[in-house]
Structures are given as C-alpha cells and as structure tokens.
Amino acid sequence: MMRFLRNWTLPFLNPRQLGSLAFLPRFLLEFGRYRRMARGERVRWADSFPCLSDQLPQTPFDPHYFYQGAWLARRLAGIPPRHHVDVGSSVLMVSVLSARVPMTFVDYRPLRAELPGLRSVSGSLAALPFADASIESLSCLHVIEHVGLGRYGDELNPHGSRLAAAELARVLGRSGKLYLSVPVGRERVCFNAHRVFAPETIVSMFAGCQLAAFSLVDDEGNFLENAPLAAASSLSYGCGMFEFDKHA
Image (tube, rainbow, N blue to C red):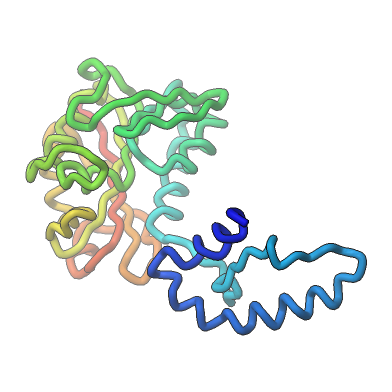
C-alpha cells in the first residue's frame, strides 16, 4: 500500500507536473487496454506507477547542463591532465568524466559515492581545502552564482560569488586551467536561486587569469562555440562558459 501511495503521489508533488493531470484519462484507458492484451502477465493496479508527461516528440534536455558537460569533456579529452579537480558541478557529469581522467570532487554537501578514479571530499567555495597554486586543472560549472544566497545551507553573503572566484584563482596552479560556467545576461540577483552576470563581470573577478576562450548557450538553447563576450549582452538567462589560463 505504501508503494502504491508513493507511486501515485510523487508524480504530482512537483508543481511543474500538475499539468500532466490532463493526461490521466489517457493513462487509465491505456492501463485497461494493456491488461486486456497482457494475457498470462499479472498487471496489478497496486503496482501502477503513472508517468503522464513523457510522450514527447523530442527528447527533452537542459541546454545549460547538456552543453557545459560536453564542453568540459572535450577540453579534458584534448590534453588530458594528470589529475582534475571539480568543485560542485553536476555529479552525473563528474561520474562519467572520472572514467577517463582521475578526479577529485569537492562539494559543500559531500557526495557519498565511490568509483575508481573518483575521490570525493567535503569543502566550501569560501575556503577550499587546497594549498595555494596547487591545482593544474580545475572546473566549477553552474556553481558560484549560488554562493552566499543560502540556498544550500551556506551563510548569506552578498559577496559570495566574488569570494568563490577568489578561492578558485587562489588554488589554481601557475599555468593551470580553470573551466567555469555561470548564468549570463542581464545582471541581477534572483534570490535565493542564483545570480546572473554580465560576462565582463566574471572576467573582472579573475584579474590574475587570462581568458583563453568563451562559449555560450543562448536564451533559445543554442550552443555557440568561441563566441564574443558581447554575444551575451542581450540575453536574459544564458550560460557562459569561460576557459581561463593562470598567469605563470
């Protein structure tokens, strides 16, 4: 009974899924039809698990996370570092990248998982657990825009993103590579979800680093490789991907 209640409750707990109730009649019709077709197979109502909004003409995806993972993977594949450190990015991305490049994953909320080639440690972007100039290859994708907004239990701090940027620059080794992504477009604070930055603001946060390349996902979800910073000036909520080199 508990499993049945969970299966029928979870799909509707998310307000974004409430619209899928319109497809409930179709589910009920198809459930009855399948049971009539499935002779010899036990199809119990108590085991039903409605997934009402997956009949789509195309596979859905989040353009920011899809393209930033692909962007980082291709850069690490070009000149694989001996070891790579990621701070707070998508754990699904990290799990895949660690199959090719040995990685340390740092997060404010520790990752309780084990894989060959992947080491997980607890740490805050306000005080990373690494010595100065000790990391040759570093990434932080869609993370620093959250720091200081309290969303994940961190302390409120209007300067959180700048402090995070300073920490990333501090631990990046001389001649090291930093791969960073943030929301870009009209600069603002969307409390307590995230901040959105002008690309020039991000470049100014890393004054000790040189921008080697900039790529972009625009408001329509299009990926623009090696775009000019100005391409983000008219966006509302794009994703800017910055490749920085640390000055030797």
